[in-house]
Image (cartoon, rainbow, N blue to C red; front, top):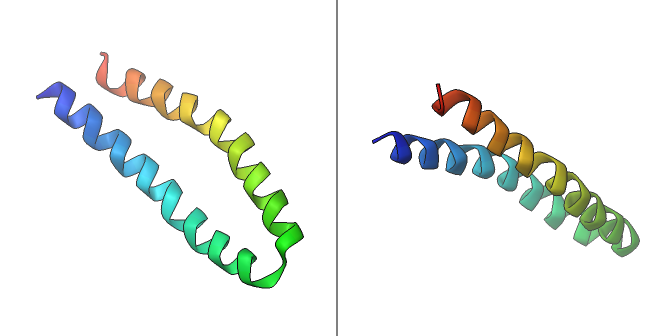
Length: 64
């Protein structure tokens, strides 16, 4: 049961991050292609930082 809640927590966190990024990406795509490239680069760099933080938070919460 603990594994289920751990997985559910990760899905909720990732969904909370992906949905706004999706809508901002659609908006930036329509306005300026150069800014789109910068936006996607920022998403890749930020995603590389946020994923380990979510994993660390999940481990701290569920591995007590």
